[in-house]
Image (cartoon, rainbow, N blue to C red; front, side):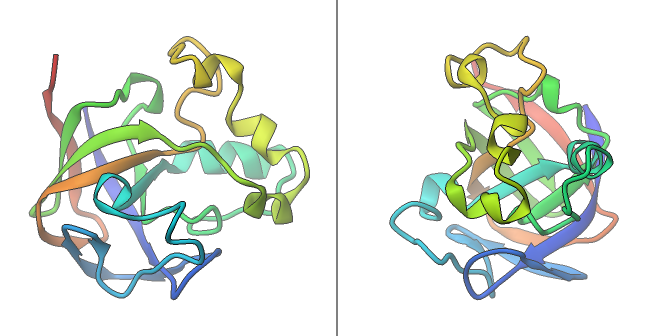
Length: 164
């Protein structure tokens, strides 16, 4: 599975995150990025939040005032089918190597975009690990950094390994 990084996003904490053209990915995330609630977000197993642009586009078509970076993602990607992403998969993003660690559980911070947005992107089936849920991957995936590196807009992002 191969896609493209269409936006890289950072903020001093909170949402939305603003676009940058390139970034250094470190073991703890993207340089220049931070979290409003570091006890909940960030850390080595949640260093990067990756979201599918098609899912964000779908939310916008449903009337939510969202755009790339609005939902707090670090990497907005196109071409990776979110329905095929699983924890344990390793992805090459630019020169960095990432490993998906968990699906993101959305929090009330996203309610600024509409009270129902959390239900649009996450449900009980996703929570239970049911990949057949139509909401699978809509909330994004957290990743740990296995190999730091540089990432740029238009870089390829691809699944390079799946752990059993």
